[in-house]
Image 1 (spheres, rainbow, N blue to C red):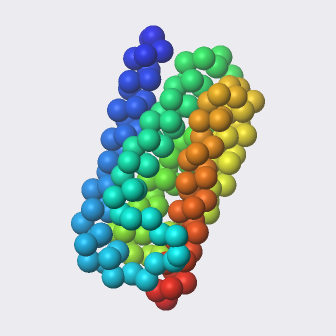
Image 2 (image 1 turned 120 degrees about the vertical axis):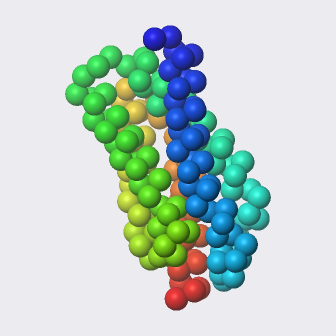
Image 3 (image 1 turned 60 degrees about the vertical axis):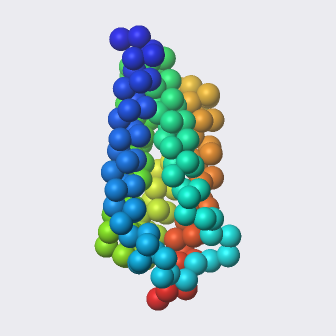
Length: 157
C-alpha cells in the first residue's frame, strides 16, 4: 500500500477517534465545565479544537512513518503497542473527565497517558527519529493538560 494511502487512512481514523471525544465534551462545556473553578493559564474553550485537530494530524503522520517505513520486527511491534496504549488512554480521558466528571480519576489517566506518550516517543526515536519528533508537541500539550486537570481537581474538590 502506498505511503499516501496509509497516511490518509491514519489521519481519518485518528481524527475520527478524536471526534468521539469532542462529542462527549461539547455537551458538557456550557454548564458543567463552565461552572468549574479553573487554574491560572486556562485557555479559552475555542482553542482546544484547533489544537487537538493539529495534534491528531501530527500523531497520524508519526504513526504512518513508523507503519510504512520501519521493517517488521520486535522493536516495531513494541513501539506500535505503546502507540496503541497511549491512544487508548487518550480516548479514555475525555469520557472520564467530561462524561463521568471524575477529575481525580481523569488525573490518574492523564498521568498514565503522559508516561505512555513519553515511552512511545522513546520507542519511535529508535526506529524513525522524525516520527518521534512529531509526538513532542503532543507530549507538551498533555503536560499542560495535566496541569489544567490537576488544577481543576484541586479547585473544585
